[in-house]
Image 1: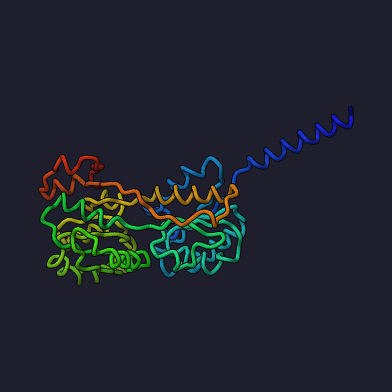
Image 2: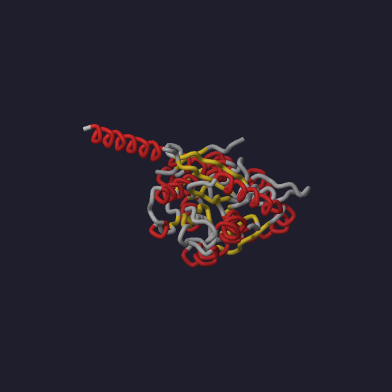
Length: 329
């Protein structure tokens, strides 16, 4: 009887200890390519937190490569040190610079920790993804959908142009447009990559002569005349001095900050999806069974302040189901 009691007590204690261990939160490291105040990073963080906060202790590291590209390699070394100190159960790496500067040289095939990427604009194969411990979600702008929506709002549009910062995400968007342009409802005539306002100035005449609408994305980090990195809103304001026509944006915050309309991708979708994939891996699903995916949600956003300021009539049938926002001051 005593032996049975001791065995039962031992079994109960072991069960309780195993339950306590199972209840311990996962340790997760998130490495963002850009700065903490970047609106895209803020959206992705919201998505990650909504999924992982109940089960995980999340540490965030920001590489600041939009405002300080030259400092990226040093920040990548710091991110690696953070990984080594934390020894996380899982990692999320966001946008292309975190892949090229951190994951590929320092983590890929060198550790077994599950890693999920988000916000990657290049083809996954560029980084050797997926592999035994890496998967994630790609980011693709809704260019075709935005042009179709713009054609409904502004029927006179016959030629569109695109403008981005000359950075990896911008060059990846250029490749996307080159591959998809035959499917666009409005011809995409020119694609402009700019690193600074002097280059935007050079493009100004082409904007006005060749473009009935501009689609903009990844503007943050373009340098002003003093070689200071500009925010997305600052670049939008500068563009408006060069181009008076409709401006379309890839993200909601771009429309809120001055673009006229768009079908936007969301950072929340990127963050939620990567977090859900990582949670599966941390709970035991082999990463090889978690396929790379791509964003598919699009939200129609209209800046009613911009439309009214430019005497564009608000068409109830076109606006049905769209989110109407007012421009931020």
